Amino acid sequence: MQARMNGPASPDVITAIQHLYKAIHAGGVDKHLLSLVHLRTSQINGCSPCVFASTESARKAGETDERLHNVVAWRETPFYTEEERAALALTEAATRLQDGAPGVTDEIWDAAADHFSEEQLSAIILEIAMTNFFNRINRTTREQAGKTW
Image 1 (cartoon, rainbow, N blue to C red):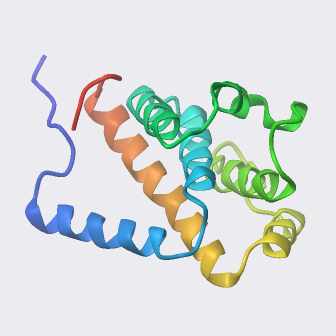
Image 2 (image 1 turned 180 degrees about the vertical axis):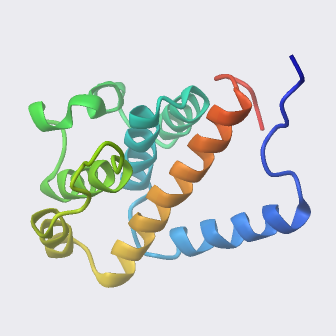
């Protein structure tokens, strides 16, 4: 079996990614919420390095283990605000596009738009897209959890 590459190593790609993350963090969304979005997207996609990295960074930023462990079942737990629930519903709908899933319905979009400005929604959507991007790279290259990048 041939060795697999370790993701996008081109300096131009790295610069582009840095600009996208700068845009995400300039969108006015709480970093804890962005961490939950990243974690939930990575759980759906089964991306172990991203699940590992997002829980580690969220913990260091003060997120509780209780909330991190339960984000997979956010609908059935009392640990998340209505704003977080709207973002997590948007995250799931935007990530689960396979197998005829309905995607982001008007109801999901309207709930998110009730809680976030246009700039914040753009940041959340970009976070979802970037996480899906890295999830796919990591799954393709068989990146393992626990490595440092």
